[in-house]
Length: 354
Image: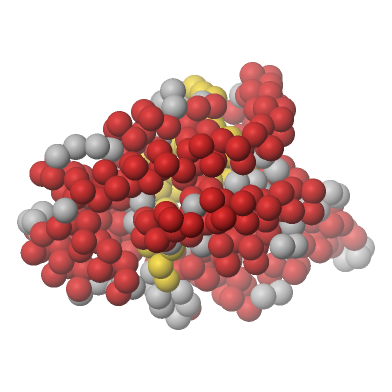
């Protein structure tokens, strides 16, 4: 097992993340409004600047990057195009854009396969292996599946003319790049310093650096770990697991976010855990995970909540170190970290001499 730092991959992800923020401005603004003011104010200025300079492309940005929600599902169209190349080593964003181009037949097959992977992740009892990958069967499958109607219509349009929409996506990103470069320069020093810190940690501590995050069960069992840094989701740790490789995208303020959630000392951490488990839904999630490992859709169905709400709860529980994740058969399974609960009970008992 080896750990690799990939700076250029994170730089390319930043471009897509910034477009996602523009398409989902309201949700993003609500999220950062109470964050660290030294950085959140800069992002709010970015949103206003980008909106003013991307007015003619806002409809296309919405088409590809808007996140659609309904009772059980969320969906973002651009992942169908870039997912297959997101984890590859790249020199620049042009490597990704070149990698997603192709003719109608090739692109239809790629988009269809990504759709099937997405549906498998959230479906139960559907034999997708027998489905023939053609337009009619995919449209029929989408009609019977719980995607939001606007998302289904956008997918239908893309399946009808794959190369036309991919060309439209590539043109959108290229038109946006000059605007983006003016914005990202404001954060370049922060990211440069953060990159140096991460590279030093990887070199000095290796797998122990990953373990110290307390987010992943036995990270040493992965074949390789690839680390990139991201700017716009600055307080997050974004991850994916493919072919037994772990891909980590560390926000430039992720450590501060972890410290804020977990507390700077044992007392703060205990209080934060009590707050998390004081929420009825999160307590129920932990109770379910105590019985069995589960993936997001299972938890959503068991609790009659949307996957977006479950995701919100899991992000907090994951950040606090109460759950870890493991990918099995295209699904991210959550696992209760009983050792974390035992430590919480031990610390609580010691604090009150129980």
